[in-house]
Image 1 (cartoon, helix red, strand yellow):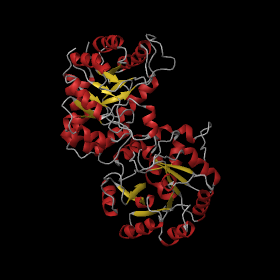
Image 2 (tube, chains in turn orange, cyan; image 1 turned 120 degrees about the vertical axis):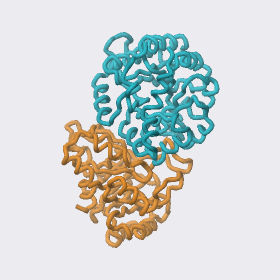
Image 3 (cartoon, helix red, strand yellow; image 1 turned 60 degrees about the vertical axis):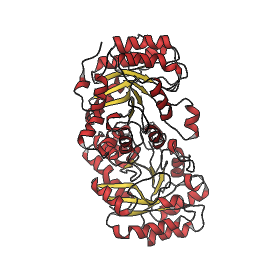
Image 4 (tube, chains in turn cyan, blue; image 1 turned 45 degrees about the vertical axis):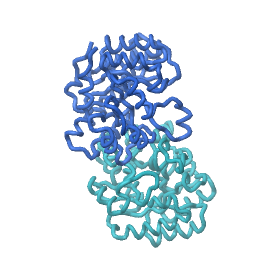
Length: 253
Length: 274
């Protein structure tokens, strides 16, 4: 059972990308053998009042509640984020919160970031934090060059140890995430798999801390699947990465 | 001496990959230049992914690598070729020292059996300094693979001011019409759409390899649509799952997929003269 923890719908203005509607994306993922997915609204990167993107997403996902779970996108420097977060959790049924400081222009270590991470933990929503949305070496002139490093994400994990934080779209190294004794350096930090060299991590870490994701429809799906297929893992570890970890993080298991 | 080797039967040939130098393997002729563990891991991972052969090089990224540094780098490649016939060497040269570059091509390609030339960003591909290397490659009938990209971010532009993009390749293709030119890693992180729009006018001696970490939806499909399936070459640049996966997912029929995976580069290698 494959569960994809990193997908998106909505309009990306800088490149023509197919399969941006829920129906199209669902067909794409199901065609690749994926049974369910967490999905965020790309419009939430660009709307000033990004909660409108959450309301929009909830409408779009209504016919696909058996496949998709919603991921909220909020800006902790914008008005009413606390009320919006509760709405996303309690009324819209969203299962995670995405923070995109590189698009909303704030520091991940600021007081507002810590406050929203604390509230997310209270309402039992994991955080999804993309290292980037697209490779900045090809970024559009109106797009951001900023990426969010693992040290910034890790600092938030240390500041809010009760939070569960999923770092997405990062090719993070084992050296950046493990202490010398092999234990995880940051509390509550998980990795989305699409850009991770799974074999670079001890199997125990991979089985506990890596959750399958593709980055569809921005990115192709098959490479992410191959990464899990050819990694030196036991069957149980592979199963955890492919679906269990993601579902557990989102409270679906 | 050309190696009558695995590539003739290989279905998947990674045209852009690298081996590494062993620690301390900086001196030419030391006999212990290759990081053997890394090479073994590469072969093992390739076996899982069905990659039969790897074209490997050790490019040096400094502004002006010396002849001794270049020889030491290529020694690692020659050792990899002795280790396994699944490794096909590409000879790195610094075109800024033409005499040394030609001598190294003689040592590595003519005598050592390497399959092509590897260039990095010491000069853009259409710089007149490239002429001796390009013309010798044409005489030998071997391809020239070059690090390339159209980076749009400030940091990459600062670090690689002489990075060749598709516009440079168009010009080089006119300057060196007999040399098979492989523009490296369409997925190497730059604006691949820009590169492909430029290559819509590319002459027949320009090829492109599919490697790089970028696996944007449609990247391979658009590359094939732009250049034609005969001029697109499978490669990973060390990022194996992405490299294989992006080609497996591409919207190609199986005959075309097989061409990209290996058929096209086998045809290039078969045209070797020296």
